[in-house]
Length: 100
Image 1 (spheres, helix red, strand yellow):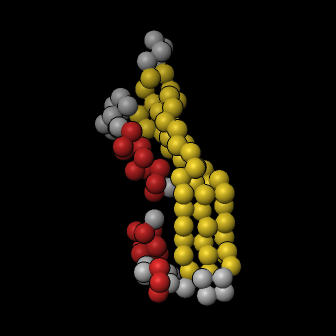
Image 2 (cartoon, one colour):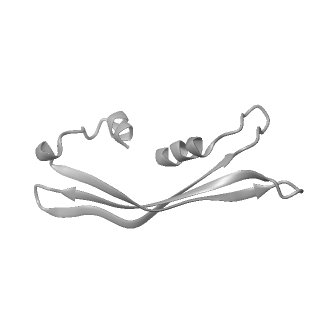
């Protein structure tokens, strides 16, 4: 998330005590579940479902600018090679879901 803000160039990252606004997030739920099977019922693809509660607060005016209690991101990843793409791990899937 920090990299997203830095790449955007509209906001800058600061210490909370020096900030005009604060973004806070809490993971509410995390699931890693089978999403695709072979004909022999072997898992080939998984889906990560990440739900977070997020608040973007203006600390100068002491009010929430944006709040979402259940922001959900879904990412799938293959645990077997597909074409030229290698198999991925749950760690790879988590990394991709956090970029969404």
